[in-house]
Image 1: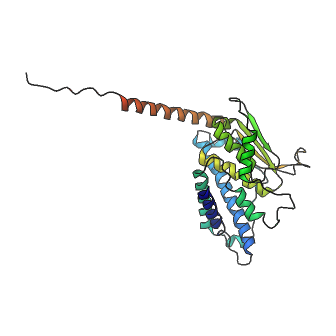
Image 2: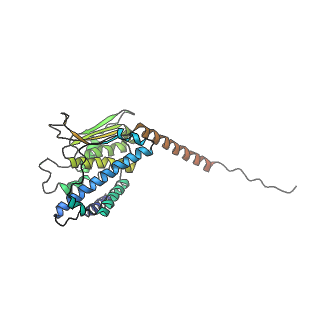
Image 3: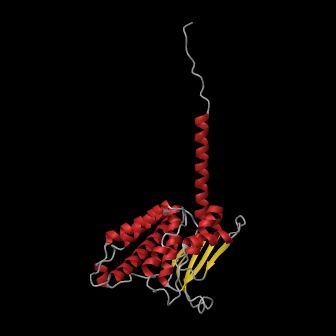
Length: 283
């Protein structure tokens, strides 16, 4: 755990190098740095998800049937002047480092919740919207507490109307992957938050686990609305909606079966007794 904390601390330092506008305060530059990092990483992972589907035989012409972005997807959060002070190398390094941390961690480990809270919600900045994040360890304990075995090949849902940075969602998926990894392909995730940027972080966290750990859920939808006044009224927008094509699951299963067959054949060839050599003598 200490190693992970050190990696996250290093990620934070790298992210903070992204924006360096001398006209902004350190806090403003740090906020913009983090928001720019999340946007770049999110867009990149949406593209990687599309490439993943195509790799597993989905025609490019059908991608829009399975991946959609909505009007909640934000652009760059700074001004034209701010953009001139964006360090492109730091942005790329942050993205690559984040992907590496996720790949080296357990599937669905919550990497960004505490980092985001530390950067954006300190000094009471989250009080107006009641933004107080669930610590990952408490989220994991809750996930273990409420876990129930899932019926084989039966669709089930996870819903969170105030998802925040995704701590409870990730903990649920983390625990389910430990208990029954096969069941993840049957889970439909529907989450919501009032804060568009929190939606961005949550979408990024689910996407990066899909692309870095090669784990597909059945579907994912993240809405942006007031859970009390808008959630059931239809007056909502969405950030990201994707559904894993059936052909992806089929191709992955075929590849896994082929790999298993190859391993068995290799084992048979290695353990097969050698025929004794025949020596030819002189009669």
